[in-house]
Length: 104
Image (tube, rainbow, N blue to C red; front, top):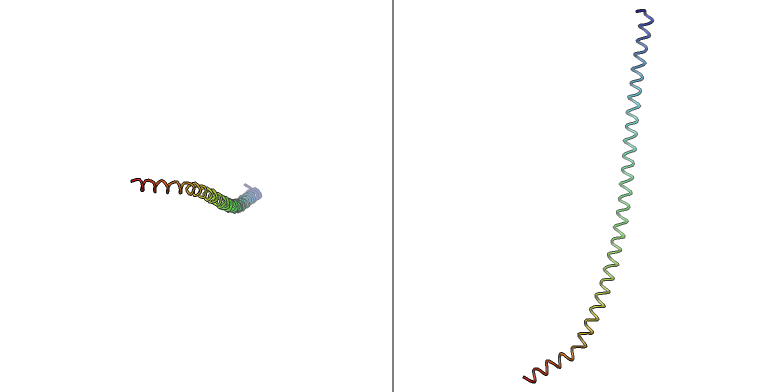
């Protein structure tokens, strides 16, 4: 083999090694960029989920507070109605008790 052919083969091998090294470096960089983008997207999704969760928590607390107030108001109304009915029947019950005691 001539010296030119050997030099040409060696040069081609060096260029191939350089191309492989460059491709590996580029691949590592692309992988690192993809991982960074993935982590950023994950963190953004986590932040959005946390924000939505906080909003839902606040809405749930407001709804439960409103529901509790409505229930309290309804129960107080029912209590007053039962008290009025009981007071209406109190005189009749007292009279009945007195009548039974007196008649015995």
